[in-house]
Image (cartoon, rainbow, N blue to C red):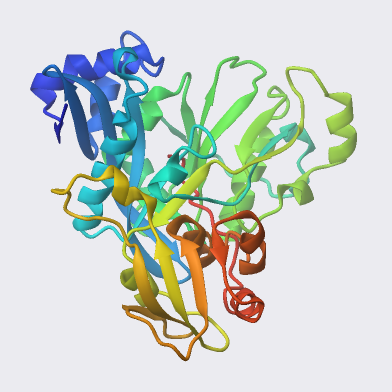
Length: 409
């Protein structure tokens, strides 16, 4: 068994085979796969000289309040049929995270296939994301949209730039490589976009990208929506409403900071009358993304909180280290720290006997730091413990906006 960098010329066919065996790749879409893999870093694990496991990551940034932190996102973890239940996926993913952490990534993120697996690598679960399904004709939006620009696959560079320049809230991520957006656009069936080029030099300022199987009536799935101002968001929603004479259902992820139910006419009635139909309206919540801190002092250096300052000892555990070989360039963040949280935050190795002690896994502490759950709640459901007075003080200090990546990965 050998871990190494992916070599496109040598490993391309094996990578296609792995993806086809797990049902992620169809015949004829091999070039899209190559574009996706080439957007970032890829590692493979060889068994008898042949790649049987593959992990890909891409670089980007994550907004923490007003600061941008370097993030590495694990975009795929794939294992062939012959290499299952050998621990390859965990070990290779751990190696990929270690390489990117050693290269400067302060945070790592991913989407999980099931709760629990990536907890073993130190990841903590994010907030519930709301998938909203609605009849666009029933949107309570009074904006009359202007004539939009039709966006096609040829506009991938413009669309990627628009995504990077969009309004971003706490936790929002930008995945830097433009090839990633290009690949995402090509994966979708019957993909199309609509938007507006209102930038000073004609830049695309707000748009959505959509894919659909039944073009006539839908449902239409919004892959993403990008906008810079509230007015631009409302114009895009007005644009969706204008499709409502033919399109009977639209599905989209609720933007952070916006409650889409407020824009829906008679949502409860519509949910009832459409139940169990192809065009069922409703709101579904699921927590599918996870993140973990890869550099505690680096993350806290960018943490500027409102209110008083709290100081405590942190006894941090990190399960990823048991999946890393001795030659890995990074071995997790476990250890004892003295932590300061406030307008100026920080962490240093050591212990101060005059301070209370918080004991936590890196996944639980990441959830606390992001504002996914309060400390008093994490003490019940996750691996986080400390004096009740300290937990209540952390609840007050880490009172943050709801975090969310706002970028599917």
